[in-house]
Every structure is written in C-alpha cells, then in structure tokens.
Length: 101
Image (cartoon, rainbow, N blue to C red; front, side):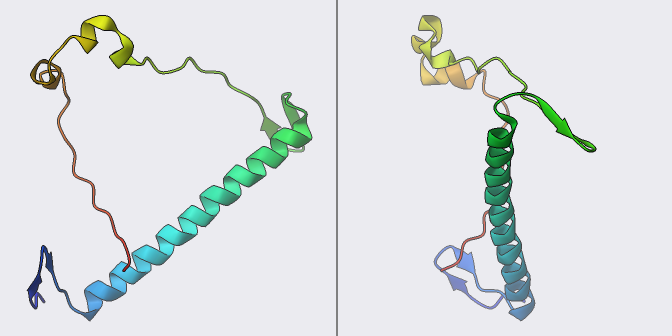
C-alpha cells in the first residue's frame, strides 16, 4: 500500500519493509561469503606454492587470460566526440540498489 511521497521515494507498508530487510541481510551474507571466498582462495594459492595442485576430488589451477583492451588509449577513439561514441553504445540498463539509512 502506497502511503506518501517523501522526496523521490514512496513510503511502503510493513510487508515491503520486511522484504527489504530480508534482501539487505542476504546482501550482507553474500558480501561476507565473497570475502571468505577471497580469503580461502588466497590461502589455497599459498598452500599450492603458486602451482597447479590437486588433493582428493579437488583440482586447483591458474588460468591466464588476455587483459581487456583500453579502448580510450586508441588515438582514433580518443579523437571521437561523445556523440560519435554514443552511436556505438549498447542499450542502457536499469539497476535496483538497496541501502540502509
């Protein structure tokens, strides 16, 4: 149920607030697990001595990829106007973000 407009936001009911809280908590857990994944990956890399390894059913290896092209360092692109560059731009996207006061 929409209650009132506060600046650019509509104030919503208790069900919306409960759902927002659940999403916020899940996002915090995901951030925790991303950090934990990074920590464990670094530990496993250290234990591997920077070489491909396996143990039990697990295999851990380094896969190298080519770096991204920095298109703005290409002189022909640097010389293009914003309008010219926009003609090559892909369709825009919308992203929803939740934050807490």
